[in-house]
Structures are given as C-alpha cells and as structure tokens.
Length: 397
Image (tube, rainbow, N blue to C red; front, side, top):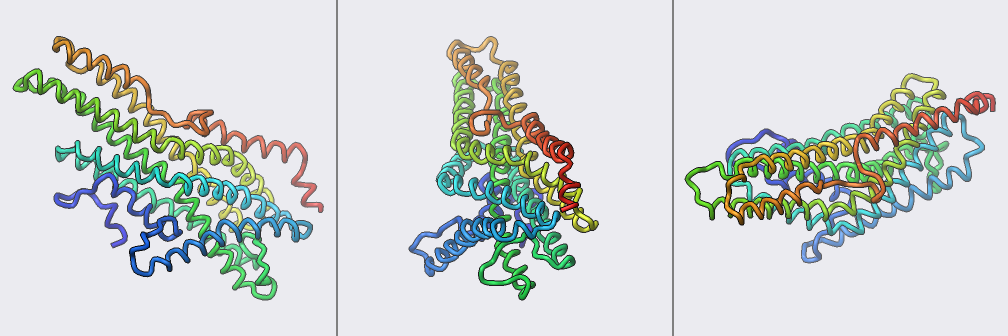
C-alpha cells in the first residue's frame, strides 16, 4: 500500500519516530545509497546498480553539461542558452551536497538510534499519537516533493517533445539527438531523474529530522509543565521526574548535534545557489515565446523555492519551540521545592536557554530572514540583465 505510512493514527498501528524515514529510505534505496550487507543473496546486483547510478549521475551528467557548453554554445538560441545555464548550477550544487551526505551518512544511523531512545519516554497515548502524526507528516513531505520535482521533469519533457528539442541540452557522445531524437530524450530524462531524485533526498532529509526534533521538544515541554502537579507523589518522585526531563533535553541536544555538520554543509551550498537559480529562472521567462515554456519555468521556480523555504520555516519554528520550553520551565512549579530540586532546576534552566540552532556553513543562521536575503539576489540578477540591455542584445544576435 503506497500511502500506508501517511494515514491517520489508529489504535494498534501507531508509528514510531523512525517510521518518518520510510519513504525517504525507499528513495535512497532506489538511488543506490543504502548498500545491503554482503550476507544477503545477490548483494552484488545492488552494488552494480549503485555503481551505475554513480556513473550516470556524478560522471555522465557533469561531462555532458561541460561538453554541451564547449561544443554547442555558439549554436544556442536565447531559449537554449537560459535552459542550459540553469541546469549546471542546480546540478553541480546537488552533486556537491550528495558527496557531503555520502561521506557523513553514518550520522543518519546515529540519529535513528536516538529517535528510538526518545520514543521510550513516550508512554502516554497522547504522546504516541503526536509521534505518529509527526512520522506521517515526514512521509507526506516526501510524497509532496515527489509530486513537485517529478512534475517539473514531466512538464519539461512534454514541452521538449512539443518543441522538438531535447529538454536539458545534454551532450550524448553515443546518440545523436538529430538522428534519434526520442532515444536521446529518453536517455536525458532517465539520467536527469537520477539527479532530481538525489536533489529530492538532499532537500527532504533535513525537514524530516528536524520535524521529529520539534515533536520531542514539544513533548518535553508538556512533561515540564506537569512537574510537581501530582500531590500524591513525594519529593523523591518529583525529583526523579525532573531528572528524567534533564536527560530528555540532553538527548534532544545530542540528536541535533549529530545532524548539525551535515545540515550545515548542505544548506550552505543550497542557500548560496538559490538566489542565482531564482534570478536565472526569472530572466529566462523574458525569452520564452510559448505559454508551455513559461509554465515549465514557473514550476521550476516553485521547485527551487521548496529547496530552502520549508526547512527555513521549520528552523524558525524550532527557535520558537526552544524559547517556549525555556518559558514553560521557568514558570513550572519549582518554587517551594526542596533544595536539590531547585538546584537541578537552575541547572536545567541555564541549559535550556541555549537554543538548538542550525547554521549554514557555521556562518549565518538558517531562518526565514536568511532565506529572504538570499532570494533577494534574484532581483539583482534581473536588474543586471535589464541594465545591460542583455535581453535585446541576445535577441538581435
């Protein structure tokens, strides 16, 4: 059942935190990024598939794009030029992010183990339902991104078939598109589907992992709110509950720290490229003559925005959650408690005030304000093109 893991919670079929990664792992398996142990039968077939994907995505596509620029640049029409320029920028950014994730993929396993540890504390039905909803949301995000990204690929291919040109101007030394147009278009679509799927994985994984982080941070806030609220418990029991909350917060912080280097590196590349990509997409619309081409460019713009905006929004909400936890802890019922409880509470308050933040390259925070600043670069690109009267010059040529 395709949509099994995005359904509403039902008693006896509640998801765990790691279930939010099911559709993501399926996508990674399709791309050859989850190698099976060699004890499994026919493991070598999957290793061959992984090698084939690496050759097509990380070698053939960059080679094809470089050779296209070398061999065909003088013959480009204005439409071909701006179609070509957009692809290398996004493709090279995806390849760099993919290399980073492949070298740091061990952090995924660390984070999943911490997910299981955080789930152990979810004993009440309300908490389990909340975890289920977060897991379903993570899988739902993957489905939505598939619709956006591969919707763009479908529309680009359709427009190419209507116009009679290959969709991405990718040089192919084996097949001449003038003689075998449909075969060349098929090869381009298959190879670009690989880079699009890789881009999807790299854009989705930070959202899913941070959504789970936010969920357990909210659950911790609820536990903190209930501290010393049961009059039937003695001081030792109240202190034990506080100690467990301190351990929960420490585990959540470690979970965030395990993912921070990978997210920081990939988002740094993505945020730097998003402004240029949006600018090129906006400029290209000035040269497209058909409505279909402009629609494809519009869908491409939406796909670019989804690469950064959703995660920046999630990080913005994470910052609010950290502030909310700090306020909830400070206003909890700790006044009048025994000395050891108050001492531990002060230590807890001090640690909670240090927000769980993600930065891009360790330079600027990942938030909506940063995303807007990077996107403003698109207006600079359009302004430069207009001031240089580049559009008219290219049309005359």
